[in-house]
Length: 73
Image (cartoon, rainbow, N blue to C red; front, top):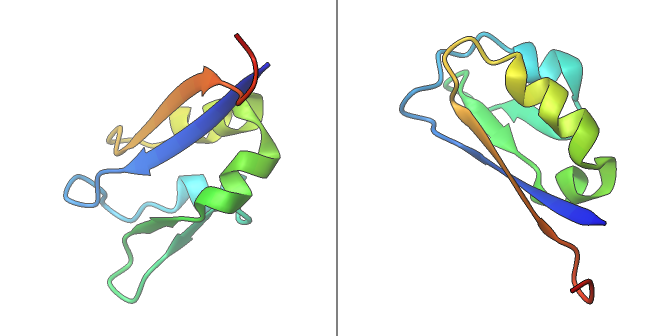
């Protein structure tokens, strides 16, 4: 089993909103229209759904890192 962590490069983000359309519980936009990530929500949705949302970013501002879940060798 793996856990996933998503990071956003806000300097690269153009505010297209594709990520927040795909997973509104994880991604949102701030007052500048740039992506924000709810890390707790990302941990709950699972890597497969995150992978799909990350792929939708037209400028590749999102990075998904999959790591072994705690307690899994």
